[in-house]
Length: 227
Image (cartoon, rainbow, N blue to C red; front, side):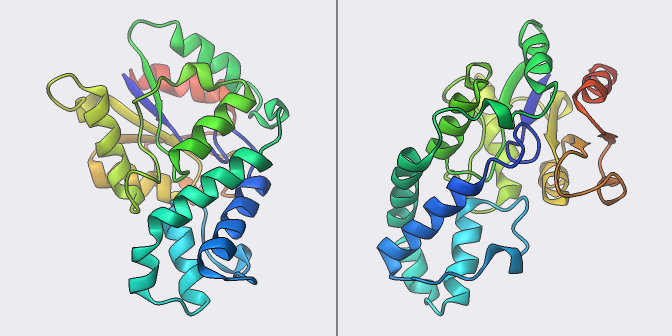
C-alpha cells in the first residue's frame, strides 16, 4: 500500500504560525503587499500554498498576470523565510500517537509512506524534520504544493513518483487527511481516502471519506482493514 499523508492537521497540530508568517513575508518582499487579507477570512484548509498566495494577492488587487509571473519568486522567498522562522523543535506539535503509527507502518514490507500536502516542498520537509518524523518520508516521493497549484493533481504526482515504470496502482493507494479538500483530491484521482478528525473538521463534515478515524490508534485499525 502507498499511504499518502497530509501534514497540517493530520501529522502535525497547530504548527502553521511560522509558515503563515513566511508566506506574508514573501508577499511583502515580492509584491509589496504590506497588509495581506487575513487568512481567517479565506477558506484555506486543505489548499496548496500557491492557491493561498493567489487568493491573498487577488484580494489585495494584484493582477492575475503579475501573480503568475512572480509565482516562483514568492515560492522561493517563502521557503527562505520559513527556513529562518521555523522553530528548531516542532516535536510537541506531532499528533498524539502518530509517530508510533508511522514507525509501525514503516516497519512493514507491504507499506510505502509519502506525503501529499499543499505545503511547498522545502517547507514540508523542514517541518517534518523539525518535528522528528521526517525520516519516515523518503526524498523524491510524495506530492507538494510546489508541484502543482491544484491539490487534486497531487495524488497522481505522488503515485507517479512511487511507481517504477508505471504509476503506483490506484487500488493500492490511500490518502490520509483531515479536510474535505483531502477527500476531494483523493476522489479526483480515484483512490481511497481515510479522514482523521484531528483538524478543524469533525467526523460529520468528513463523512464522504471511505472511513473516518478520531485518533491515530483508530487510524491504524482502519488502515489495516483497507490493506
